[in-house]
Length: 312
Image 1 (cartoon, rainbow, N blue to C red):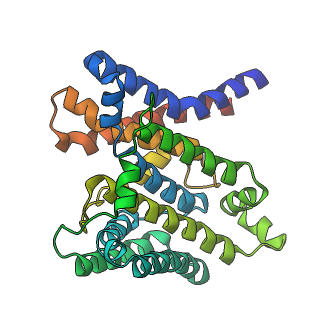
Image 2: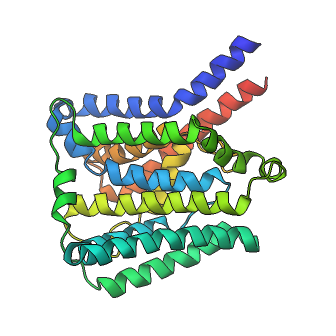
């Protein structure tokens, strides 16, 4: 029985990598030219901002909450980055730091008043979007040169998006999954009452996780304008759905604090490649959300079958 359980657990952990691998194989079969440095770089150019937004969502899911404002928040960061950060860097950095503080305050509000995170974050999405429109009513601005140069970095042999995704995943994996404080943060989603009895403040933990979500949301917005070179209040409208789908594809669950940073990044890469896959099939990009939903349903169905095997 134990070997069967271990095999099921291993297969469950490998699902994000398997999903990405199957999609890559399908793409390479349909379009062999994609199996090149240029092809991979082109297909994965937006993988970094999506991966960062997915990790931001993952931090919130870790404490059994859900963030419906991350897309609008990334759009706000993009607007700040393309205007204030470019023109007056000091003020821009101060504004971005303030955004992270507000994100931590959002976590405090949810914890102190026992409010549904879906309601609070949905309301905040309109706040973020409204501020973004006030800052940049029409698409424009200019990305700071440093960010633009970083996102255009050329690395020999392996495209920059892949290297960046691996580095980001490993750093978050080490901090959240292999450190003592990371275990405490994850425990807040698995057994908050036990942590409270041990003397840990659930308020501080919730604020820390939301602050991390805000920080990675800021990184996502800045990396995004590094690619687009300009800002737009609606530039990341789909990132809320992308982040939730990527985290779930990566093995995250809405209860128990069960998450995987590496899996979340793999899920984000899978979603990023879906658009290219549809293009190679000559299907309209308008079907991208539907295709991503289909991939999510298939992976969740496989995960359910594996979980049933674990129980047996």
